[in-house]
Image (cartoon, rainbow, N blue to C red):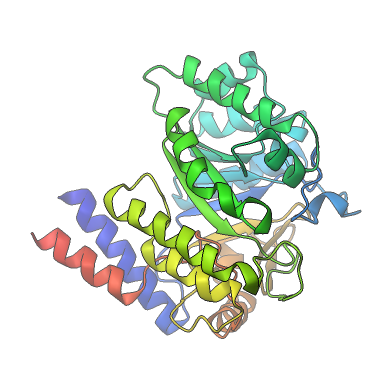
Amino acid sequence: MHWKLKKLSHLYGLHLSRVLNRPLVKPSTITITLTSRCNLRCIMCDHWKSKNKDELSLEEIKNIIDQISDWGIKGIDLSGGEPFMRKDIFDIIQYATSKKIAMNITTNATLLNKKEIEKIINSSVRRIQISLDGTKAETHDLIRGVEGTFNKVIKTIDYFDELKNKKDIKLNITTVIMKQNLTELLEIIELAKKLNLNSITFQPVVDDNLDIRRRNALNPLRIPDSKSGLMDKVINDIIKIRKRDPFVGNSIQHLESMKRYFRNKPLKEVKCYAGFIFGIVAPNGRLWSCMGDFGNLYKETIKEAWFSKEAGEKRKMIKKCKTPCLYPCYLNPDEGSIIKATINNLK
């Protein structure tokens, strides 16, 4: 019961933080974007096109991990670009492990060999988030922009499954929903189960992942109006699966919202918690959100930036956002989920 009450307290704290526009709870996790570099050329991503080569040094990242540890935050996310493009990635993993910080790593899963996977399994990495966008090589490779990517991902997943034994590490996949893979979404759920993965999360394609506020109804990756009936059917089928099986990581509200998102209709029921639930450290040393920088970590600590006046102004902007991106990580505790959680904890 103790952990349930802690979770409930955290939910109420987050909800009240958003109402008051003042963080009453510390972030659940800090994401460290290690690099903008990537070995793939994904059709829905602009990071690999960026000419910005900023990257924090190993010592600077260690300093940020020290700050996170001292603040009492128990988890970090390592992301990119592709985080395994960095040659010192295992030094970073080892250092976070020495601080007893649990890690989640988001990766395209194409750069890992068996020996490196063994190192990950024996570290404090607790979750690997793998990108998989189709059940066929031609679909996934088309979306990821490099031939042979699908087979590499499957091999990496097989290696993890072979080596992890009883280790406490979760393997999950994220699938970006777009016109190119709409007909394979249900099959991806089945494939994920066959591969012994722990869960799958769906994310609707954004029009510009460097500026997620931007909307472009003519984006050729979006599901067009002519396919809206098929989209509704597929999403409804996913919702049916979700109701009986938590293997699908999205909430039902999140899945329902995708229908309006692809129709470019207002999403008034969506409440975004970006800037309240976790912070993102950019490769240029800024703590930021989709609405801009919270602070400069070369001049202040993460904790100082989190409580700064600039952060408060950005949170106000986030609350007024009329084009929510539907990134599932931001859509956390609405009033309904808090009430349900309260009832469940009182049973």
